[in-house]
Length: 354
Ligand SMILES: [Fe+2]
Image (cartoon, rainbow, N blue to C red; front, side, top):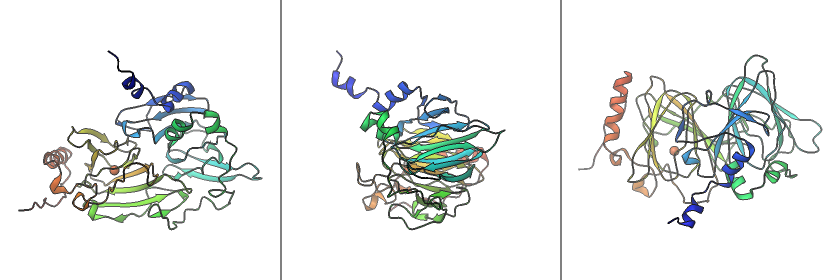
C-alpha cells in the first residue's frame, strides 16, 4: 500500500518543479565531466542556452547554472533575489550592473578564469566580447534555496528592492584588491584570473594542500580556491550540502561516502563539477603530473543546520578524518591509480599508534 507521507517527502522540490515550468534543462547525478561540453537548451528568461546542474549534493540549497553567450550576442538584462558567483570557463566579454535610479551602469570586463558575483538583486546584463567565439560560464547560485522558500518567480525576478548596503553604484565596486573578511580569508569583488591567485599552505589538511577562502559582493555564500599537489590527496572531511567543486586544472578523482556506506567515485579533469552530499566523507586525489586546482563555491549560511568543522580533526571533535583513520583500501587504490598514470606517489607513510 502507498504511504502518502513518503510520497509527499519524495516529491520534486518547488525549485525543480519551477525548472520544469521554465523549460530550464536540469542535469543530475554526482558529477559533470565537463561543464564546457554540457549540452544546453535555450532558456527564455536568460535569453540564451543553459542547463541547471542540481547534483545529488545540492540538496535544495545551491546549484550551478551552466550558460552560454553566443558569438556577438548578449543575454537578457536580469535581476534576481538569489546570490550568484560566476566563473567564466571560456571566452571573453563584459557585464553591466545598475540599480534603479543609477544614471550610469558599472561595466566589468572579464575573460576565461575570471570570477565575480552580481550583487544581490542588482540588474545586470552579460555581453560576449567576441563575434567569433562563444562564452561559456558557470554561475553557482542559491536559487534552489530561494525558490524553494518563496515559490514565486515574480518575487524572485521582479522584486523592487535595492540592497544598497551591498551595492550602491560604486564605480570601483569590482576591485580586485583583497580585503579582510569575517566569513573567509579575504573579501574581494573581482578575481580577474583564478589561476593566478596565490594560495596559503595548509599541511594540517593534507600534504601539499593550499587554499585561499574568498567572500564576494557581501554575500552569505562563500568560496575557496585550493590546490592539491601531484601525487598527494587531501584528508577526508565532511560538511554541509551544496559545495560546488569546479575543477580548474589537473586530473584525478574524488571518493565520497556516507558514514558506513559505499564509496561513490567521481573522476575529474579541467571543467568538471562535483558536489559532496551533506555529511559524506570525501577525499580529492590528484593523479596528474600537474597539481590539481579547484574552485569550491559554497552555501555559506553560517549557523544554519549542523555545525560542520571540516578543518578540525575528528580527534578534536571536528569532521576531518586523519590518515590513520581512513579506510585502508583508499591508499592502495590511489597508489594503483598513480602507477597506471606513471605519476610518483608523494605521501609520507601513515603513522599508526602502537
Ligand atoms: Fe569538501
